[in-house]
Length: 277
Image 1 (tube, rainbow, N blue to C red):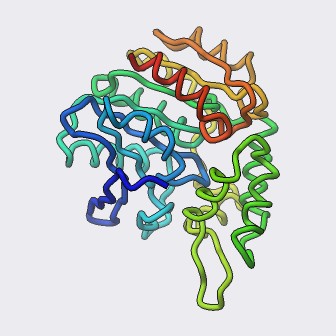
Image 2: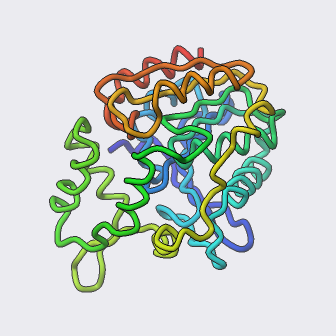
């Protein structure tokens, strides 16, 4: 795990956001948004690969990682988008590249449709405008009904390996380390707000199901990354997205499930750098 980043916090009034800053602020800014169960450290290999040429901000979105939980349990797509807007305004970032995975990809699509003037480029990783795949249902069910307490890091890794068979042990260790915390009795629990899990169980306060109508508002060059072994974003939907986005392409990453950039970071980073150059 690299120490070339800086841990930073931003107080938004009702909550405090944590983010990792990599590279020089004088370079073009890339903001990275993780998925439903992710965190800022999910991007460590990607951030490391970008830091020489880019100013990278990997955000712990509200309710995850070291960011505060929402005091009113607001985990709507509008709330995530507003957090990002406040972050960029506070840091005086007028134009930037936005890359989002899964939930972060949907948040990115929504933000890009609402603030098209702010984005230089947009990357969407393994998610579509509508949550309608078997894989999306699987992830929601895993979060709502899966284990919430573990006796060891190795137990967490074995659990994570079931849905990410291509990820290296180092990647799974990093994911397990930053996605959990130790309780007073020595067990491990997830760091994300339990309210997010409860909302998955009840179906309340979930992101809007359909963003297709927002896509035409996005005006920047867009790349859609798809894991070829993923059950979330099909090739058919990815091609439909290309037809709807004004300036977009799609690329498939082999040996990758839904967690594309963690399963096959080498190929993902190669394709990302080609898109950014």
